[in-house]
Length: 285
Length: 270
Image (cartoon, rainbow over all chains, first blue to last red; front, side, top):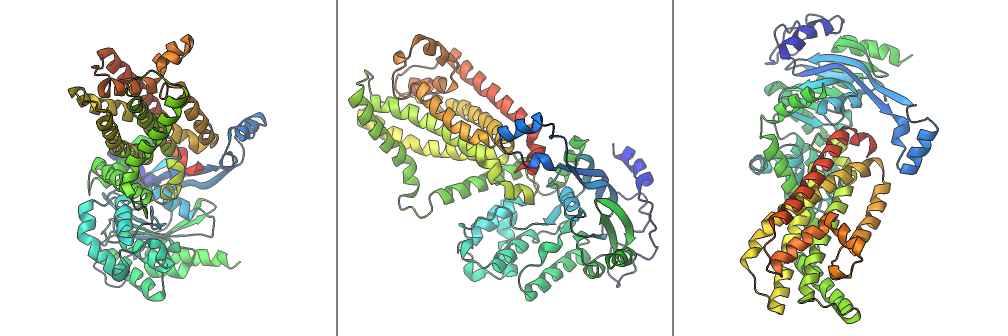
């Protein structure tokens, strides 16, 4: 299976110019993947992914509506194509930025990679552990204390009990909530909740880090801390980064490669500056 | 294509802990959460799981033995056994049915084995059931019913009931995602089912056609089993065991099939 797909990959590589000096960035101890990626296995493999939402179906919440819709032959109509034949291979150590206007399919693609959504056709394959920082705080219950929520959220993120035990202090210290750890979450400010959520999600050293722009949480001090943590993971641990934003400057700062999505289609792939320049050029029209 | 896709996914997860260990930990965490939430701020706390069936039994015994004068020995015990068994099934299936819809915020945020949500609810009710067995013991002491070795059959019965309930829960939870009508409908079904099952009254009261229909009522089979080992000192026959096992297995298979067939579409409907 793997050999067969490996052979196919080379043909399916999007035909876009990739300049040779992609990784010439600030003298980091990066794993320095060569641009050809020969013989290297992609850490994220997105293969002809289509994502189709059936808008009509989403509104049918009762049997009555369902039968009316069948009677009117409306069931099959109003499809919305969120992702249209997206193919991309991401190799270990790359920092990919996904740009595009609102509704272009960035978040849908990210959710497909994180495994939250299943593509209608095609597939996404990932290797290694992943920390999805898409929407944080899964399973947080406002009635429970921060300590209880940490264990619950950690369990849902795939941590073992032992792992959470060992890293509990790191989480608490990073989130700066030591004094309130046994207080119900409903008494916390929203910024504090977001800090705990971020601390839990990033306590691992994942192979793949998926970050959504919506991650601007907490005050500016904490935001800086978050960026530092992401920087640390990327540069010290060699984590592959997938970063979504519609602000090109942010993408330029964090990433070395970029993918531009437009109405669910891949408009351009390649070096971050080239893609962002092209994106900005249309943006201001 | 999608099978290889999930297989690859699972590989990634196993770098930390095995899929099963992970799901088990999630299951335990969710059950713990439900427990904490259920008894928050109540002074008697978990004691309510014992008190509730006991008080219900007292009320029902007062009502039924006064009004209908059934000729059943140890009527309070007869009542409470049927009542907690049916209550467990009803509680578990109802909360399992809502579990996927309630977990929508989690499903939209992270990748997770969706089956843990309905199964967690079943497990939670099972734990509750185990606690309410204390109420049964209290009633037995009060009525001076001697326990027998036959009670050792209880774990076997619990396996049947849990598997049956889990199957029903899986089926209902996936149906409820697509048709919310199921939620309202199930309420009515459960009430009908409860009155059609000899829980408060002796089976002899039923008309002939319903008497023969009881063979196909899984809850009647389970409750009979329960009463056999707890109050009638009857060893459950091999036939009864096979019937219970068969009903549980078929229900579970149907529920599992329905769930697996539809789970990838949940996210679009919750």
